[in-house]
Amino acid sequence: MPVVAETVVVETISELRSQLRRAVVAATSADTPHPRIALVPTMGALHDGHLALIEQAQQLAEIVVVSIFVNPLQFGSADDLARYPRTIDADRELLTPLGVPILFAPSVAEMYPARGTKVTVHAGPIGERYEGKTRRGHFDGVLTVVAKLLHIVAPHFVLFGQKDAQQVFLVSQLVADLNFEVSVVTVDTVRAPDGLALSSRNRFLDERERRAARALSVALEAAESSADRGVEAALAAAQSALTGDTVVHLDYLTIVDPATFLPADVTHHGRAVVLVAAVVGDTRLIDSTTVHLG
Image (cartoon, rainbow, N blue to C red; front, side):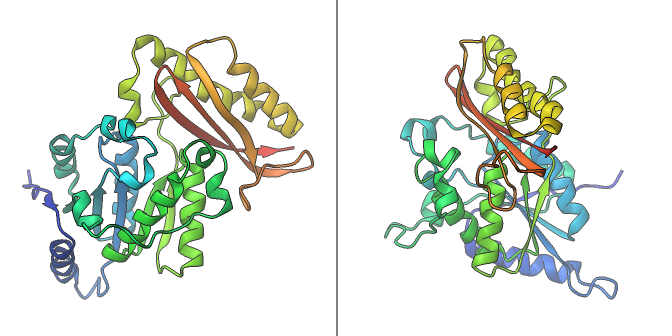
């Protein structure tokens, strides 16, 4: 059995760039004169959803960088930031057998020096809707750190999961509006056998909450089943799936036009995205799916 090289954990931007230069030289050959780089940005606590992103990245590029950074700019609450799981040793052990060469795990001080972050990215009006309405400034923080990572790594591809559909839309806008030379690749949501979307936050659910949380995916399934009858029918079906359990507190449920991410009106036909967010117990969960409206 071949020996798998251990994933190298890199904590500074300068060392990452050095590692990438060496990796590009090592991957260059007559058959591969211009090795490609793929970036999988994460906040750690890796699960099978992240592994699906990595698997797709390995199909696209010769060099895969996984980043783990719990970004304080995208947390509105200090308690939520402190609570977010940090499992860097376990994450590294998970990455090594997958053949991931580089894990970029910078500190907050490395990404945001002591002088403070004076220039940030504003996500625009869509960043203030849905998830951004409840979590003020969240997407400004997301796009700021994504812009920094794209500048630092200079990947050919950057990969995100479809569960975070609003994030994918806004990152795609960032790339287009600021002329980043990178392809945004979206990977289908990975779900547990009962349909619940995998999330690093699922570990906070107790047994009862875990059962109740399935209501989010059931609501999306209901919307998809009724989508041929239009927006109102799809929303009504999804809403009915979210009633009756006091553990689940709905934040928003909406159907948006994927071209604009504005709410789809009653005349909308064709592809649309259903977004849902709820607090289950004390844990905030989001999910989404694509439907075709009749």
